[in-house]
Length: 216
Image (cartoon, rainbow, N blue to C red; front, side):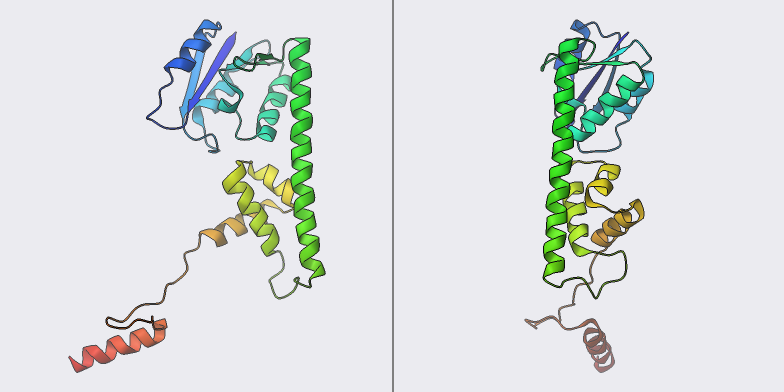
């Protein structure tokens, strides 16, 4: 059976073009999502992957409809291959059930490995440079600003999975969650006093407010 998966990023776009192409390619079942490709939670994709059985082929209109990144795409297709499921991308004319398609996919897999290694090398080089400048102390164990910055950059810009980010940066999942929680914590803003150009510290603001209330 050929199983189709389609995705658009916003509700303003429609899936008709992809659905028509997938049906023309012989897909008997269609699954879809209306979410950004960077989103981890894609129920349509999860359902499509779950529906695939050995001997089936997962079909997409275009490669970027499937994976958040090249490593993520390779991970999905490798998992399908291990389950005896083929993969076809219509626009790129890639079909892993053929010898030529397998060759192209192996090239993609090599590029994904190269990309991961390159990011890891750059991250390690940055950390080594920071250590050489003596910027190692003063933080709680397990917290490293360089690693935190690298992890957050991958999370926000590259669409990597948590496992991939942890592998590239060299951190545990617990450390990753610690970094993301710290990044999401709102910082208290100093309060302004009416008629004052400069904000006062929170304690001074409170004292001034109490004094004004008493005088009033």
